[in-house]
Each structure stands twice: as structure tokens, then as C-alpha cells.
Amino acid sequence: MAAAPVAPPAVPAPPTGLRLWWQASRPVSFTASVVPVVVGTLLAAGDVFSWWKALLALVGSVAIHAGTNFVNDYYDHRKGADSAESLGPAGFIQRGIVPPRGILAAGVAAFVLGAAIGLVLCATTEWSLLWLGVASVLAGFLYTGAPVHLAYLALGEATVFVFMGPVMVLGAYFVQAESWDWEPVVASLPVAFLVTAILHANNLRDIEHDRKVGKRTIATLIGRKWANREMYALLGAAYVALVVAVAVGAMAWPALVALATAPLARPVVRVVRAGGNPRKLNMALFLSAQLHMRFGAVLAVGLLAGAIIERA
Image (cartoon, rainbow, N blue to C red):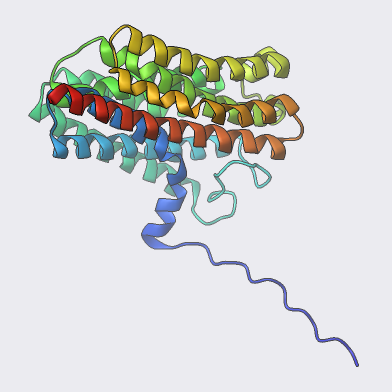
């Protein structure tokens, strides 16, 4: 008796409506913008805390991050850096789910939302905050957008370090304290090093592909051997910066609890050191993102404890 034909596995239907745009915005990456806002807010919480300002700062930062992701997908598609074979989270354009112009329009809309929230925060604090907001929107769009394309000029890591570290932390702090200070800048450095490590892991994975399409990153310029060493340096610098920040008084001593996450850096190092094909290096990207998120969560606990002690 002939065997019954086996039906092919069902292909899940693409998302629609708000779920489509939510997934296309790459929400998994949003911890990279949530962590610095939480850190900046908690740094001020020992003296002052406004929940609605904190919420607006959080939503505004995520909106700008989403806008950056959308614009990045659009321009990477145009430049050939993203294709159907790419390992990154993008693909809504390549699979024909959303037209390129739709992705670009979504990016602009997200930037408009982030800018509108920024204006509300400026009006309720001080207008000096406006310059930080304008710089953030410009950096987000020009990261891959015309005419600058920062990520294609080996400036991706520097941009991410500055804007998803000191700028976001300082901005969230200012929204609460309504004053500029040096402590949030120093306190932001551990987070800045770890978020930069996420991008660098991405560039390590894509080093050969980026060379083919003419995308210049630090990894493509210095080669895999030195790029690996840069990864180790970024991870180590995060923990050194944490100790220094506490030593100089930029963070309260309970923040040192984040040192407990140091063993989580070892799997990242092992994957990077082993090298291999891009699919294996994809794990380094995942582990780096997990490390940043967990470091941020534990650091937040330490900062909250410090704020409670300060208020007691």
C-alpha cells in the first residue's frame, strides 16, 4: 500500500496591523534604549522622581530607537547590505511584506513621535534639553540615512557609544533633576561599553558580507584578529568603568552589585574566540544583548537601593 503523502509544514502567515509594525520595529533591541533611561532616572531618584516624566522619557527614547531601526532597514536594503540571505532581524522588505517606502515612512513617524515627546519634556523642564533631543534624532536618522550614513563610515560604534550611553543617561537624569551634572556621564560609561559591544558583535558576524557590499566598520578596517580584541576590551572596560564610577562618587556603592554579571561575559568571549561562520557568531550577538540587559537590570537594583539609602 502506498504511503500517504506528507503535507509540507505550514508557513505562518505574516503579521498584520499594529503587530506587523511592532515586529518590524525590532522590539527585541529596545532594551538597549530602556536601560540607559532607567539608569539616568534612578541616578536622580535619590533627590527627585516624577513617574510621568520618566515614562515620557522612556517612550520617547524607544520611539527614536524604533525610528533608527526602520531607517536602518530602509537604507541597508537600498545599499545592498541587507538581502534575503542576511542573518539580521530585518527582512520585512526582503520578504515583500512591507514596501521600502512604507518602512521609511514608519521611521519618520517614529522620529516625529519621539520629537513630540521631547518637546513636551522641554516645555515642562528647560529648553536647554532641546539640543540633546535634536542631536539624538539627527544621529538616529543619519546612522544609516542620507546623506551621511555614519554606520558606513566606521562611525557606528562611536555613535552608539555616545548616544545610547552618555546622551540617554544624561537626558533621563536632566528630565528628573532639571540640572546638568558630570555624574550621569561617568555613570553611563559601563552601559555605553556594553551597548557598543552589541553592535560590535553584529559587525564581527557580518565582517565578510560588509566588505563585499562596501560597508566600512571598525571590524572591516582592523580585521578579525584585532576586532576580536576590541570585543574583549569593550566587555572588560564596562566593569572597570563601573568600579571607577563608584570610586569617584558618580554612583552609590550598591551599584557594585552589577559586578555579579561579569561571569556572563565569558560565553561571549568563548564564541568570539572560536570564530567560525556567521551563524555561529550570531550567538555572540545574542549573548552580548543578554549581558547588556542583565547588567542593566542588576545595576538598576543597585541604584534603587542607593536612592533608598540616600532618602532614608
